[in-house]
Image (cartoon, rainbow, N blue to C red):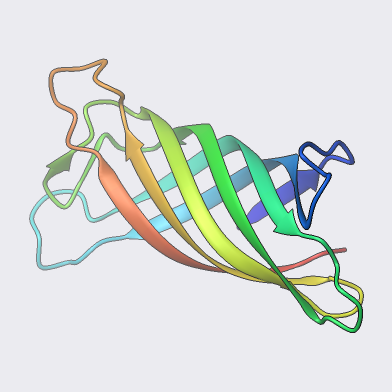
Length: 140
């Protein structure tokens, strides 16, 4: 579950695409495979800064493609899950994603995102973990 706050600031807006920053605040619950030993669930909270490069609105278009790139700071209630050692509870997150903003009012957003969380080598144990996510968002 998350909230995104978009900026009106734009960069590289001379052509068909432009880029704009946004901030994401999220809360998540991870449920692991109960067949593994050790901790199988945890809670996460995080804040990430992103840049979204999006195609300009085209006449009569109902979908605009975009690409997101972001970095963030995350906290997990455990430092391991399913026997995977994260090394600490404070983790760095790197994100990349693609998607479509949909509808005449651009209220809907569907996308795919890949996120890597790790402690960034600040501890000897740094297994990290990757998430592959399908996103659906409604703007208010």
